[in-house]
Image (cartoon, rainbow, N blue to C red; front, side, top):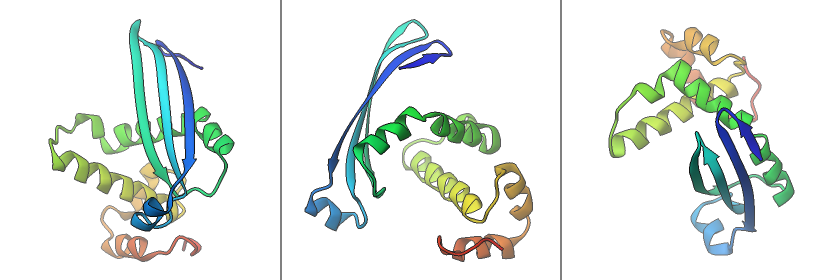
Length: 145
């Protein structure tokens, strides 16, 4: 149950191991996940269904814990809005999807590069094309510079 900020929402999760045809089409996929939310938000009925493919090698119980720890997801949204001003943009159609993908890639590259603060990471690389290119070439198993 998620309570607070005008919300009273119950989240449930169903997970199924990805069948072979999904694993072939999307390499690395291990689970198909459905997260359902029902309740009220700002006094109005709320219902949401989120579907995911994930490559996490874990159990349904661990996936449920990740959903329960939604603060990290909310934290990502907060970062996207405060640092990247995502909510202020009015892209439509494929533009919105493309920009969201680029923002996600940028945030992940900054984290992969070892920045604990997105703001500090952005300030460090905004005017440094060499640093940006080095981040784009870094492999996930490499230590940050």
